[in-house]
Image 1: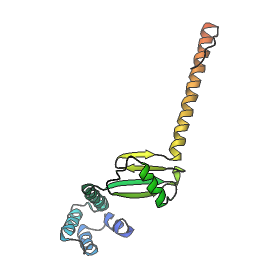
Image 2 (image 1 turned 45 degrees about the horizontal axis):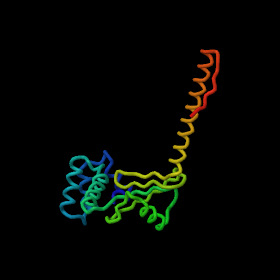
Image 3 (image 1 turned 180 degrees about the horizontal axis):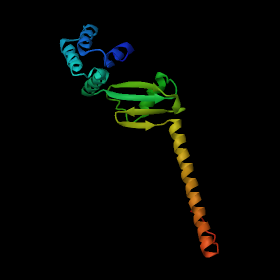
Image 4 (image 1 turned 60 degrees about the horizontal axis):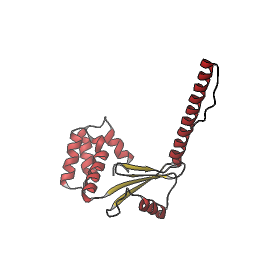
Amino acid sequence: TIEKSKELQNFFDSPIIDSKKKANIALEVFKNFSPVTKSFLQLIIKQGRESQLQNIAQEFINKVEDMKGVQRITLTSAAQLSDENISNILKSSDLVNHNQTFDVKSIINPNLLGGYILRVGDQQIDQSVKSKLSKLKKEFQLNLFNFSLKNSFIFFFFFKTGSCCVAQAG
């Protein structure tokens, strides 16, 4: 509810509105919630932590899913993927435990250029084009640096000794 309503987020984040008014409005907005949940909301507001309601709710969901053995999976891609593509990616990954239920969150990030990033828990597989191009760039820079060092050594040797020798680079 809070995540979907910018007005409600702004209301709870506002330092101008006093906590009693926030508590009364929260009781009205969340009137269908259980008494325990409403009391918990009142406590959060009384302690001045209402700006953290979304984070608290998400952590609660995460804990319940952990207890139920639900895997949280995030699949980031450059463009929208079909259900078949998502299924194929999940089936091909060793990170996904196919004996458990899982919740897949799909994120679109055009900066990836192509490919995908699969995150399961705290593990990640980066198969994005952006990542591969970045690795390639680093490899080229390293090779140019090594080439530059070799040439500097040959020049230094020639300058010091006055003679040059030919050596095969390995």
